[in-house]
Length: 201
Image (tube, rainbow, N blue to C red; front, side, top):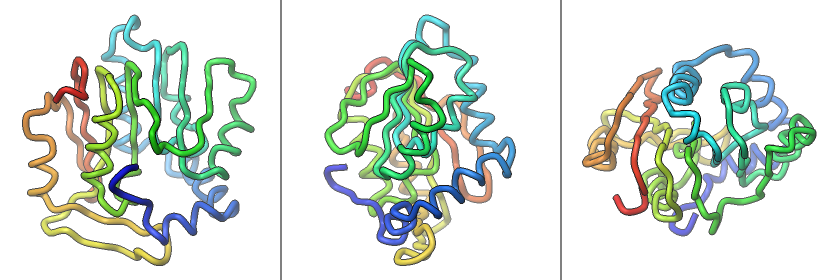
């Protein structure tokens, strides 16, 4: 994004095809998480006429498609070429799927925007989310933040690297948003916002 970048540890991890395959396998192994349940329930709550286009920022290998009840076009966007390769191998026969490498400058205009377990791997999690909001028009936005009492950094140069924002930062960011659902899962908070033209918020 314009004012934030992927953390060094996370970047190194996703440049490794083995690391990407391990993340791909984890999706199946962990089963239904609170974040996945929120995404599935959110899709069901959106009128069919508003499910035409879905854009997932940080799509990984595209497993989220399995949770999408109906849609016409799915834009798979990721900074990791390896992840998009896995996504393409899984979904290239599905004509609804479009793969986009890198989200820098991408127009985030869609009925539904998803960004699950992505913000915490950015150098500025809140700046990353603000940048998404500023780049397009959409009605529904589902995203996660890693939240702690105080801002905390984990393994920035190794592992997958992540930043937990403070509760105050998270609350300030969503202030004024129409937040319909919030779930907590070991510090990972899932927010569901319903808006007409989020970029004007």
